[in-house]
Structures are given as structure tokens and as C-alpha cells.
Amino acid sequence: GVLQPGEQKEFLLSEGKKLVLSVTKEEILVDRSNAGDLSFSEYLQTKAASFTAKRVKTGNCNITVIQDNGYFEIFADDGFVVFSVMTY
Image (cartoon, one colour):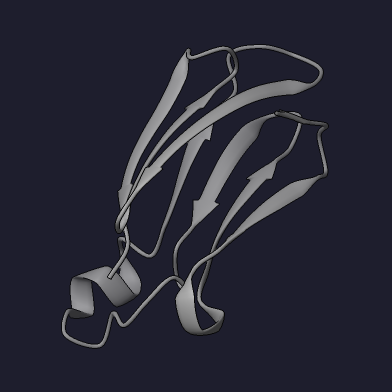
């Protein structure tokens, strides 16, 4: 899919849980703070609840997402930016 700067895409998981992907002109953000139970790990709650990366390209952001049970591979900016994300 394609996201324009300022847009976001939500990936709905079970029981109201979601993973959110947002794009700005400068960066891409993956927020998994509402994607599952992170209470077992302070690190996951604070430092690993979301990830950002600088954009490599300008304009619209081409995104490919491959999803498996509890795991996402996200390829953004035509694959120049990659996130590997687990949900709990």
C-alpha cells in the first residue's frame, strides 16, 4: 500500500489490540504499545513499545507488510526501511 506523509495505518489484532504505522515527511513510526500485553517487561513498556526510522525517500511511502502469528515484517520506502516487529 501507499501512505502519504501525515497518514497512518492500523493493523487490527485480536481483542481490540492494534499495531499502528505512521508516516511523516521525515520518519516512519511503528507503535506496538497497544498491540498486546507488555506488562511482563519494563523494557518493552518503555523502550521497545515503538520504533522510528528516518525516511530514505520523499513524497508518498510505499509499504509492504508481511504478517504471521504475532510477527510483522514491514518494508517501507520501497524496502529501504525495514522493521521486524513482534507482538505479544
